[in-house]
Image (cartoon, rainbow, N blue to C red; front, side, top):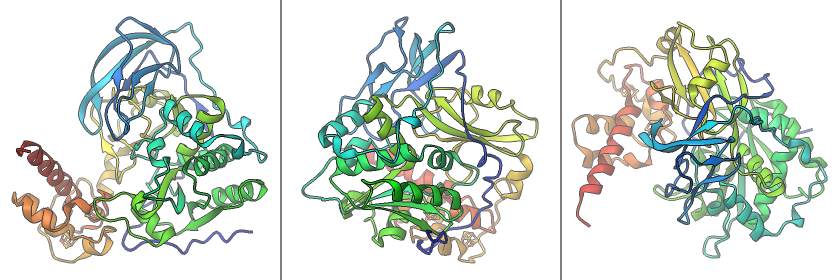
Length: 458
Ligand code: SF4
Ligand code: SF4
């Protein structure tokens, strides 16, 4: 038996109300696609894709519609059978607007894609697959980090003699309140996830793998541990329970907890020999390599106390948030905020035509009362210098000094206080008794610095 209680963790962090109860027991359900999808041409870190379809062109599900033309990029595919209606600017949760291919679905075609976990079992043997071919299949399928960052997975796994990989950490933490899609993927598609883990290890030429799961998910820990033990080829894979604390699923915090190393500020995990992959990404790797399927669908949680049918849905990428909400019972008059993602790190959206992307695993609906209780809407008062924001900051920086500098236009001072080390987790805003939107100030400061740098002569 595996010890469920996790001892590994990081410094700082908070314990927000988990609110997983709305959806954690809801099995993954197929979603019926609506009239149209909007597939963004940039759903990843790196160069955005070049559209390779034209207006009025018929497309089939799985067809490439955006080609990746740079090393750090990933192609995008149609998630439905239909006709290209337009290639135009579309609402984007972070950028405001971004280019997308709008596809009208063919009502006569079968547009329901079924997942394929039954293709994977304890006898899966990754050694039958050539590492180069695994990496090619991952790239062709447009697989990117599905936990939120969207870094192209092939680039992460590419072996580099200058930076050999010591460990692959599989992120099964899902520390954001409300969200349960990764939990369902781990418990329902266990062998598919494990097959993806083994393929990733082979592609990265690194056999040392730790599957990290927060100890508030005992069922996932037990099921994954059992699957690892049953699998002949998974000798160097270990399931490690980690302590439940937000943001335990943050890449840097997870590495610190499991591998006891710090990623340098401005650096990336491969610099210290680490690769972090989300569990849903592993499932996508397995599907891409073994079934030859591109990443056209993902499991997304729709949750909140006021939605009639909260759940975990297998959704075509490009589906408008409005369609998902309608499918789950529609907007209740009590709902005051729609968030793409979770309440800590997600983005509040006003335009419900914003589409689901490869990285967007949740829609959270909050009522006015929940927002007020969580302090999001209360009036800001002066800082009382309690120091709580410093205590909870997992990046070890001084949120109040940085926010003060940004508020007064002193961006150079904010920079000196290591503003760029902020991972935008929201812990400081959450804990602040003066209701100061510290994370908001810091995000604004980062944008202003980035804009100023762009204007500077080379
Ligand atoms: S300063 Fe950034 S990293 Fe630190 S708690 Fe605030 S949002 Fe999180
Ligand atoms: S938590 Fe809020 S009140 Fe306390 S020091 Fe930080 S900014 Fe000031």
